[in-house]
Amino acid sequence: MAYISPMLTNIVTIVKKSSVNLSRDFSEIERLQTSIKGSIDFVRVAFDRMQKNIGYELSKFGEAYPVVFAGKNPNKLNSYFSVSVIEGLANFAHGNPEFAISVALIDKGVVIAGVVYNPYRDELFFAEKGKGAYKGGFRSHERLRVSAKQDLEGAIIAVKPDMNDKDISYKVMSGVIAQGAEVRISGCLALDLAYVAGGKLDGVIAPNAMQASISAGLLLVKEAGGMVLDMEQDDTRTEDLPMVLNSGNLVGVNFNLSQKIAKVFK
Image (tube, rainbow, N blue to C red; front, side, top):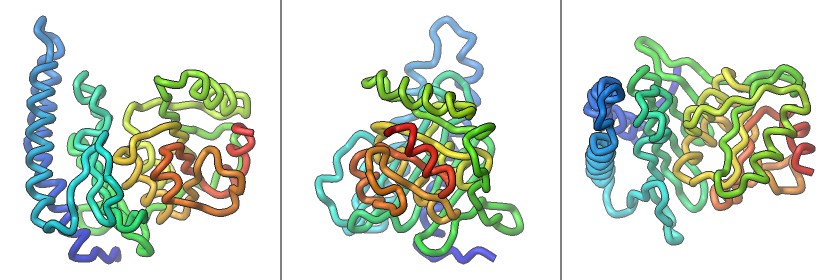
């Protein structure tokens, strides 16, 4: 039985409550894809409404926990919510259900609680530092565990390309493929990390990712028994999660694969 603290329970409630209109908006976007005008204006309105709703609800935690949205700088705040309102926005705008809301509570550079929620599929993933990672269920919650894959041969590795640095993106994808792994690009990093935590993917590599895109997901991977490393760190036997949060150069995977993926970057 999963223990969910009052803090995490409130975050989950806020995420699900705030996403009600988002599910309706997504259904409308699917229909707008076939129109001449398209869905750009509608997506902008949906995004702004979602940001306003979740910002308002999270503000009820008080001034001790300000809300920092994707793309914004936390400005050396000690404690804050790191929020990606619609992670996978391009997917959402094209009627692709690979999107999610990602909310993490960060205290002194450490993620202490995280929630990733796909309202279209009603997939809820949550974790609290030191208490495990779970997928929400109707009657009970499912404990998440990373895959036990030993080799990159036949593994499925999710990659988030860096459009501002095509060289590193090419190096990552070609290096992983050369080791016999399959590369998956979903366009929703938060869900990729949740699926790594649940063993549906064997790993994720994300150069130069936004903090809000990875903060909740990296806790899921960590609490599911995986490792979260910085792509450029020398010692891959230990973790430095604040370093990953600051750099955004993330590798999330199980221990055995982490040592083999690290060789790709050397």
